[in-house]
Amino acid sequence: MTNFQRARSEEQRETRRQAILDTTAGMLEEMPIGEISLNELSRRVGLAKSNVLRYFESREAILLELLDRAWRQWVADLPALAHAGIDQDAPVSRRAEQFAAVIAGSLAQRRVLCDLLSAQAGVLEHNVSPQVAARYKRAAVANVADIAALAHQHLPELGNSAPQLTAAVIMAVGAVWTHARPSPAMLAAYEADPSLTAFKLDFVTALQEMLATLTAGTIARVSA
Image (cartoon, rainbow, N blue to C red; front, side):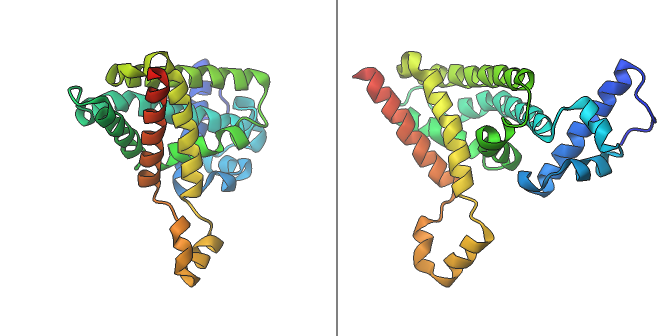
């Protein structure tokens, strides 16, 4: 919460803007995206809803910016993890498995990022202006390019297909995250009928297996 009544300077406006982002980030740690409302955000940040909308055009615009923030932090952390987890002298099949393990393992503790990625196309890219959508998409393209460069560094066998693999990886993260977080009704169904748990996913295990398959498949297509 800011301690001034009206943001008069650019510095105060930026302070208020960051307060809105930080407050929303805190809410994401407590609740799923679907439960975050502008009314509750306004109450927590200490601003009228109309004032929040002076800084961000919609709830989705705030969440898109937070997605980019979380994504960039993940991208910044990946090189060290890849260096530690991928043996450059190993055969390509082994490096592909290690790459998948690094990506999946790196997301294990990044619940907010996974939650936001799972909602990106279906929720967050809606209810925003073309300007906000374009700004976010440019940032996303840059994030994908950074991961693709890292993938190519450790798996040069990918050739020019590293960006396509990376885009598929991002889509897989969102899809697996969604399916690995069953609803209360589905959890109750699993408890009542344990045979149904054959369809229950562990996020990291399922993601690692999917990414290993995508990576191996991409390399095979490039080599064909």
